[in-house]
Length: 397
Image (cartoon, rainbow, N blue to C red; front, side):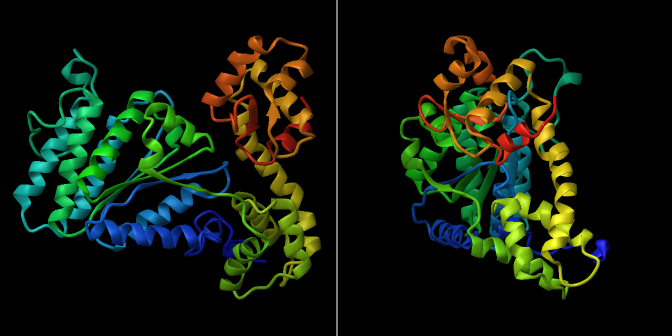
């Protein structure tokens, strides 16, 4: 098959395979957009799931939906140990520009941009020299006395309120999408919850859509006890067999090509129904197929190439971030689960390594912080990456 036409290549096609099977989430967000635009109360949304289930792609689709409805929309990717102010300022700047196209009062837009600039400038440490101060690229003077106190919780409530009012002027709303939400600092998580709480009380048209690993609800709950009432939690999981087949068939058929039922069986077995793996194995099978349709033999021939690519880009890049002590912990988890996607008791890990549980706490906590494992429940630990245990057992160190 022509590799140039490969519909599984990153960015190919109009609807990425990762989005297949997410019709329920897309429809639910349509309802959120409609309710908020009509001034009715609606909770913000939090998507949780393992890596490779398509959360980031789904966030992109939700953003596109908001923009098509005339909303302002901006996206943030949280990073460990990084403050929220700077990326949030850039995201809201984008959202305000979306709204400005429809707004009939330029002075009003500039006033909100001035407040945003004041908020953004507080990202610089106190006492920083002028040359070291970050400039947000907002071409209006910074306002004073609004969203510039330096207290992120106070400033975020004021900023969100003002930006939401700007959206209200044009009868729409603002969607703020935050990927890797579990990586936000505790103070930023707390401020975000407080701002969402204030907006819900006011019925303001601004919604936050967060995405993160399975333990994100626990992170939010530890920050603010009322967070359970602020967000609607949606678990994003692997695709069903029907949806996994659709994720393969749709892009293949767009290229007027075919694939046998046996090949679909083989792709599902290899991918486990995880969208990222469906795309990886589908891409390799397309390139390996000498003719149309793609056969089970083509999938079999292509699998080692897909495995090698995943070993470097998906698994290996994460494994390399672990220290020797952390790798020992990961390996023990893989051995105890026989490489399956399952949780394991932390006490079992200690027993397997012949160590005291307390001596392994630093490695475990660091792995959680790096996003390689998560605590499924008290005393339990699991990989955030599907098939990671299988990768570790097949690895020759």
